[in-house]
Image 1 (cartoon, helix red, strand yellow):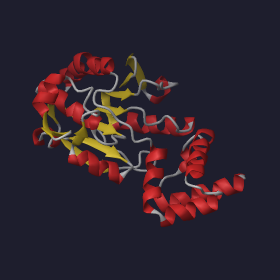
Image 2 (cartoon, helix red, strand yellow):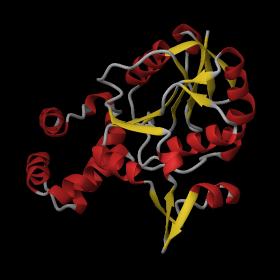
Image 3 (cartoon, helix red, strand yellow):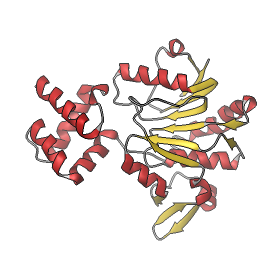
Length: 257
């Protein structure tokens, strides 16, 4: 069985460029086996062949394992800390903020950042960088069109100011779209930029191995400028943060020392 798994993840990486060895095997195996049963695939060999020949199932499988879930202002109390405490502190030492939304999915997080920056008249060092491994969700993010359900967590004042209602959907205004640059990136394999004041990586690493998490957090630390801040998800915690050169300044917020 181990050999079958190893062959499968090797063939899947060749197909998708996603390295499943960086993910916790038990959780990932359960997710994959569940999907295989629903797709009527009897074994890993038949499943990989199905992924190669059926684009729709391949697309659904990518969504299933990369967990493309995002929300505007997810965990609003944490966003309040970001807006009222973290950002003002960053602005004391740098008037032009360089910001990155890592693992941005369909763009809600990046656009939430853009709305805050617009409201507070924050100068950006260019545009907000928003990256994800999945090109198709990046295309959706670039369109900036969301369902009524998707915008439920947007403050009403922001919804009226920054969105245009179109039938049963809401389109984010070009003034906000232009503040964000979407780009494909594999966080585990690709190199990062440098000098970021603020990096958000929230609810992305849930299935990563501890080794992969530590490697990723070290890369984030290297990408931050001194005293820059990393904002992580509400189910996450960075163990041995000091060894990485980070210190906790609020729950889910870590500053480069």
